[in-house]
Image (tube, rainbow, N blue to C red):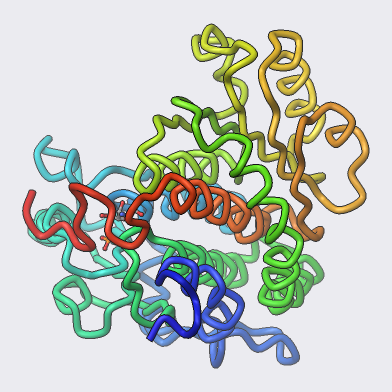
Length: 367
Ligand code: M6R
């Protein structure tokens, strides 16, 4: 049932090209220039009239929410806030019938997310679910929704659920942008075309990462700490990379927006500290280059995720993993992949139980 892979996690990492395709199939119509998702079409007015969109989730799903915040605000110019469901439910939040709440959950059973949904509904909000498990509690409790079509995710560490959540949320952002006219037709079309190419670019990323992720893992498998840095759309990917490493390898890892370094974490840098920097060509490339220089001058070890053809970061980094080029907003779908593989190989080399890490459950149905 692991399909020839040693672990479910590895199988699920390699399934990403096909499940991303499953997720956009029947929804993304590049030739007609449309995105069609029943849950959105039926409730378009609610989204268009929303004063804000509030995203609630936990763990990796919360990271997907952070990526979506940047994408929805950029594409559709609707104000978005992202909150941990566990905080939201206990803090008497301001929520009205002008809010649209998007709840993201792979399992659809996370207790805090479920409770947050109930609270939002009690206060009159329209609640839209992005779930993977069909018929799950959250998919039933929400007013409408869109499933990710990732298939069963068995590994406790979420991988394909994350990239398919981002795929769904990106399609929502594009659909809303189209309806609001916040994106030019050309731009809209370019994004549709590029989204369709993501599965093959994920396949290419897997191939580009395969050997090198293992080599880097062998070098750093004994480190006690690791930092992950990214900017813009890749700031949440830094958080996700760090979460993946800590949960399956038990190495202490932290993710930061790269510019926050100088506000504290840079004090941690010495010759023993590996820093994973997400530095694709698009986005805030020059700023990330200066962050890398700051780390280098303090003897930190740089593991960089770069675009194919990059020269500047490659020259500075101790190790690099290449990804194909794509649009800035779509880079998380590619930059995530090598980080998943890096964590996986480190955990395997440390003899950890990759699919069932200690102290963790696949769905957190108690608070
Ligand atoms: O099923 P959910 O998406 O609601 O789960 C949320 C988190 O419990 C989950 O993402 C958790 O953080 C994973 N172990 C991360 O890999």
